[in-house]
Image (cartoon, rainbow, N blue to C red; front, top):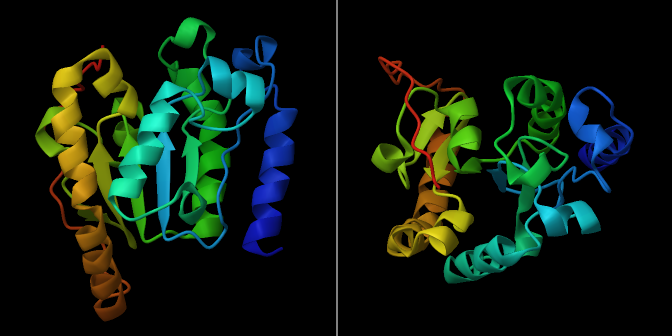
Length: 211
């Protein structure tokens, strides 16, 4: 199967998934959307109310802000792939639980393998922890680092700016750097395509709550 067919198959599997308790309360699963050839994947935390209604990621107020952020970086939603670490809405928008993250982990890994993006932008602490564990998002947001054969940029979740306006300037500044970072990633991957990250592991996992 090509990448597009693989993503379609994963979406079908997600729509009938019963691997964790989140399926009991879902209206529609939210597998993610975007071109199979995307250079950039944005990975958030979990669907909210509107996402659960529509089956699409980031369609509520935080999604509107994300669209604005992408436009600031010269990108459209149709240019990137957007998804979450869990594919069904946690009740009352609570944090995803470890068993739920694990249940959806295989789907996300297969999506990443199919798309093979140059950059993964993590939105929020749960997404960040999957790729850059053991750090505070307040310390590393907006900083691009190589992880395996691609680059990861941790960013605050757009919802953070809606709940706590002090985060808005930081989020705007981080997305403003994205075109330059994409150019750097393209150049680095072309020159050293098989380099593996040499970042030293953090000493102790610690995460910053957004709310």
